[in-house]
Image (cartoon, rainbow over all chains, first blue to last red; front, side, top):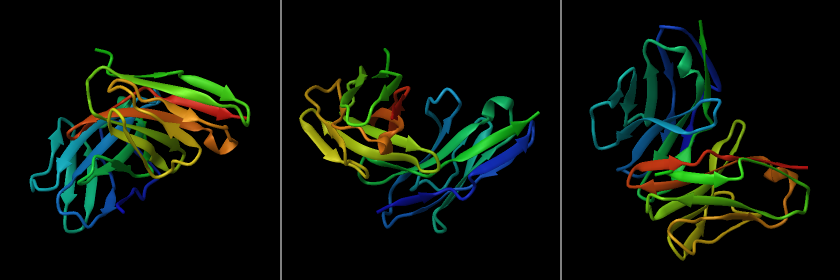
Length: 113
Length: 110
């Protein structure tokens, strides 16, 4: 079975600075998708970024980018120019051949003014 | 286009009571799922459905039942609520590689 690990339960960053959230996963599948979801205090789950494993190029969405290292099974999220609205829980997720998603335990990000 | 809706948003139950969490989607997605979210554990899959009439168990199915009579609706039933089922519950509908979540239900079992 696939597992997703997020080793940082909590992180903090100064406003306008850059922060990197870590995620590692375990799988024997060769083709899969990885995701980062944001959950603000409103509880809504919001897709931040998606990476397809067969693509070597790292995904980017505005201030959000990933560092995908397939051999190391690592998928970190970098947030540049952090804003107060970035404060939230962040979940790393995996989807393989089936349609089920596997989520990590989450990292709570605080943004300090 | 409402996406995925869930009712109720909050619920308090007593141990042993039963209830149904409602989930509906208007996107015509075949795949739907139920998760529970607990502190430090992320979202864990309870049950899922790949289409009307087809359901299957996820990682933590005990104490829950589901049915899928239509594409739109995917209710989650708690048969006899226990304090261990205190959690936030999310319903989701998926198409290809995108998963759309409902707003969640916070359930407390006393």
